[in-house]
Image (cartoon, rainbow, N blue to C red; front, side, top):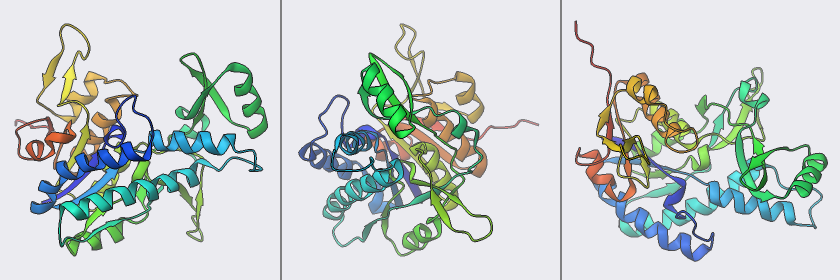
Length: 307
């Protein structure tokens, strides 16, 4: 079976954990342990979040007085793909002796006319007090939005149209290679309709939606969305909270999960199942093997039509 496993941003850095290199090295061992059993039995693509790492690099670049301007988000995202990719490759090779494991910096094509560019919503970088936020917005032309007790930069989050390197990923899978790619949703690019040339854009693509698109493109049998809860919950955080063990795409959308937490994961699973007729699941990283074998997580299955 061909599986695309989408790691949540907390796989390498737990909530509230410092963005130290040692912490990330330690956490990659947990990732390798969870995924190695799947890789033994199946073809595997691993995608991953990068929000903590991107925020760190964004803060460092903005604060660096030796630069004439901070690095753009697309280049910082590419840096995180290289950093996280090498961490994952090292531990996965150790857990899978003799198996080829490769990390790719991948690009995600988006539509330059996507309405998301007119309404930036994705937070990047640190929180600033009001006055520094206004100064940075004026100096760099950034959009800022309220965030807790301050303001943060926001960029567009366009919908993924295509993974530029999807064909390469397919070829690698056919040779038995475990592929690590799609970090942070990939580097967002627009394509010239005449020349085919790619141009980067200051944006962030949702990692789960990008993983669903890639899973379609490589003809995956199963999309596995991994996070820090054992399954989706109806009424999460309320006295009526209950686990959702299986759902259809329509049922996921009807539940209206929060946009900044479970919503994109539910939408990614729904899109993959709708577009392919195959299965997806959402659950905890440490239970990855059990989720694929139907013993944990929330299974997302096609709608069953009764004549």
